[in-house]
Image (cartoon, rainbow, N blue to C red; front, side, top):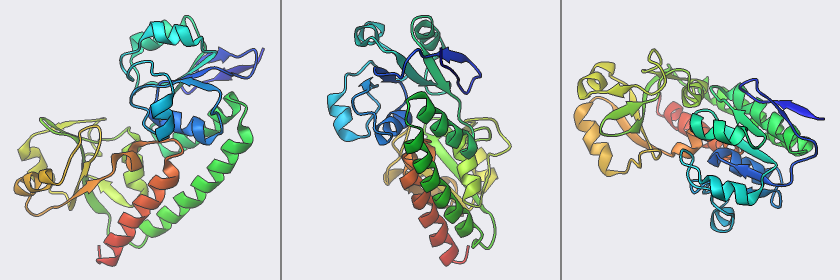
Length: 269
């Protein structure tokens, strides 16, 4: 019986190629679409917004941290794809007692690349996965090349939440992508998603404050708010999907980051 190891080193068994897949993670839902699994994906979360026609048509099983187990049972999945951080432990444990559940755990670019390769194998789409990986690797090299054009490592504060302010620290995928951009994460010495007071932001004195569009929907009006707190810092909005979605959205995310880096480099940064 074919067995697979997920990114938590758990072993799952799939007697045949899965034909009824439930995805509990927006980034990985889009990946499944781009691997050509239109017919096989039978359920997604309400936060799985890409592709848009799947968001409209596919059955919803709840949110990423609140599953409707009765809806999942009705779909009779032969594979569930989850993520350690985005989903909740109790829900995953309940599902894992009943179905094959493959769990990703993403901290770095390399983790994301391994995930794509493994999901390709898991879903009998290895060729499609390898093609995607080749495209992503080429874009990643272009981003690294652009980062070498920066005059110095730009000190960046990447905020994901307001009231209280929460930033991105080490041991996160976003932190690794900031490094790939040639940026220095001013919260890189702090774990995961630290809360920051006004005084903390002032003391960190970042060159650039990036306000993510998700999970908190930072908008133009919030730029002035941060500019008052840190008048010496440049404050910009950032598309959160481009920095945090670790599936096939990286085909858009890497060029997005490269454009930011090249703009800063052209300004002499």
